[in-house]
Image 1 (cartoon, rainbow, N blue to C red):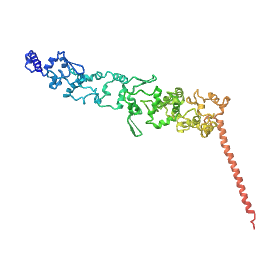
Image 2: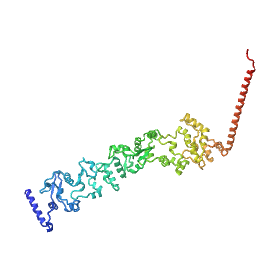
Image 3: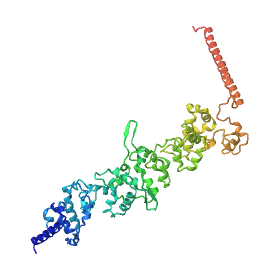
Image 4: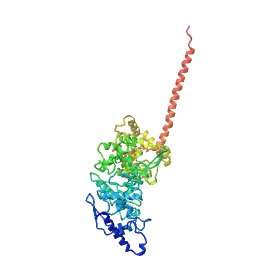
Length: 545
């Protein structure tokens, strides 16, 4: 039977079916896709494609009516509107040019562009990959006959994407996407990263790591958290700010993590075998901007310990942190807290000292913190002779400052009296002439303590009378209970402090100048007499003839 006979038969069948409709319906012409619906509603036929895949001819009319092109459509959409041109829907149908189902779907999707934007304009999240052979088309996302409204896709954007994206060729891609999508917040979807307009590298870093809550496992088995709160960076010293009149924008992730920026995602496994090696390696990042500080730190005791293999020595991030970096001296007590992360025992002593109590309990800005004595980056070794000899001058930075000491009723004589006595004079000479040679002469912290300095009146102070002998015996083991009495402390002798010494000093202060003045007067008068007598003799002697 030829094509015309098949067409005649189908026409007769359609007319017969249409004739069986109610009279009211017979007054209207049949819709252009009436034959399509009648034939495909209960068809069990199939069409084999060259790939061997089958296309089923059966189409449920109810599916069409419930789709976006169905009863709720603003204008009727017929089968022939999509399945064109004419030779495509005439019966018998022309054979398809598609070699497989994917190509068939792509050819069908082209008809969507008769009414809608082209895929080159509207393809959310895929416009960055327009050269990809796997670029989805309209049918892939919206379906064929059961066309889903865009609102339905937007209601479950992740589920819509996962219809295709269920597995990934790389293990890192797989678990990262699983964790990120599971942690999406309001307004976030796959398009947060895979937007039609490509986001910046920095935005991609922040979007991904703000949603990651898992850890990266290093070769050692140690774990490093992958979660980063973008607000930490914005509110840190690397956020947007103006310094010395110069405006700075917020630092980008890729400014520091340049290696990850170059190699992209998935990121390569870190070279560091363990957490400590990774922390030490991050110091190289800081020098990109802080070269002067980096070089200063290289001469300090921490960098020297690292070079000596003591890997626990402090690095940039140990002290300053990584993302939520704040001013290290705001508040000022933060300095001692930072140092206390490694030097916990010393921090405990400092907190209980006269300096620490004033800083932490009273927020006193005048008391010294760790960096005032040790420096911040070029920290010298406090166990050397040079440090010991320079320590009195270090203490004198505050205790010889009259403006500061007057606030607390402390005399600056505590420093000048030390420098003037036997201990201080010897230490000063050593510092000037042989700064690297050891000396057993007492410096400030030998008597007062190092980090555990207490008020001079405190019960456990090393310099109150009850404890002073034990303090002196550290250097003078043979000292008896009378030994400390010979010390007048750091006060200048006065009627209040050491009155006997005061009177003796006053006596000598008067007698010595008077005695010396008498000597000068006697010698001067004798010299005057001798000169006068000399000239008188010359006048009496007769002149030579």
